[in-house]
Amino acid sequence: MNFFLETLRVILLSIWYNVESFIYCFVPKRRKNITGEVVLITGSGSGIGRLMALEFASLSTTVVLWDINQEGMKETARLAKEKGAIRVHCYLCDCSDKNEVYRVADQVKREVGDVSILVNNAGIVTGKKFMDAPDSLIEKTMEVNTMAHFWTYKAFLPAMIANNHGHLVSIASSAGLIGVNGLADYCASKFGAVGFAESVGLELLATGKDGIKTTIVCPYFINTGMFDGCQTKWPRLLPILDPNYVAKKIIHAVLTDEVFLLLPKSMYYIAALKNTVQWKVTSLLGSYLGFSLEVDCRSTCTAEGTRRYY
Image 1 (cartoon, rainbow, N blue to C red):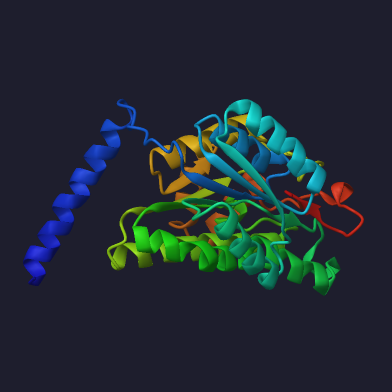
Image 2 (tube, rainbow, N blue to C red; image 1 turned 90 degrees about the vertical axis):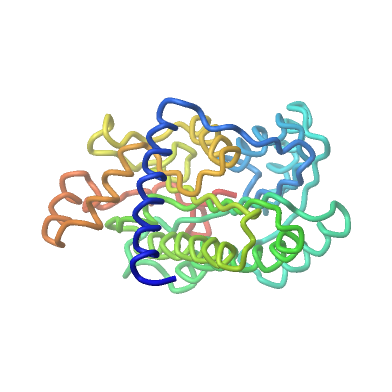
């Protein structure tokens, strides 16, 4: 295709995609049917992971729970059964351990079958400034928040590729789009998760596997306990998010094949500004919005020095 035709094609499709997006502002997108699908959620023993498990259960799916908290998983499983899940399976798995991820993944494939919806949700935060964070906690943050996604994709993506069917969901963070003072390792891990998920999504499209959808979720701080002690400078513009609201928005995004979900909606504009203005203006806006203020969630850290989703 020559330069003129390819440029014309891009212009026309860009116009159409924008018109389509405008139409969807008024006409709801059609939701796909996931009845009978096998949904695996990491970090599902509490918080957003549990709430997503219950939402998926209500859609008559088979729910597979991964966590390091056995009691938390049991409670999630009980609630999921009450919500209407076809089956619920629980597996202890430390997502920071590659070998354990592969071992438990093989067990899931033998006992449950191929996973068709994978939700990478497990995560931790040290709650310490970069120079105060022990190397071991920095490494653990990267292992759980970023590298675990590599291993779960490696484990479950081949079956999706073979069937050209599936959905990959990455629960990242607004801190994976915009740096936050006092969360250097957490931001790095979430930037990595966003870049990884986006790149794999493009790779799948380039190889013709358009039946495998991807959703990258970047919420502001959620009131799950992980960021207890954190405050927002402008609560009307950037509110601390309600977990139930976030879970429902994530499920809706999956059912409508939404590629990026930023919460609250103001994050779309903030992220766009961050990528279009010069650095001094970015720094000024960061200070105004509170991203340059030190995030204080140290009071909520566990004995191991981290706060966990799972």
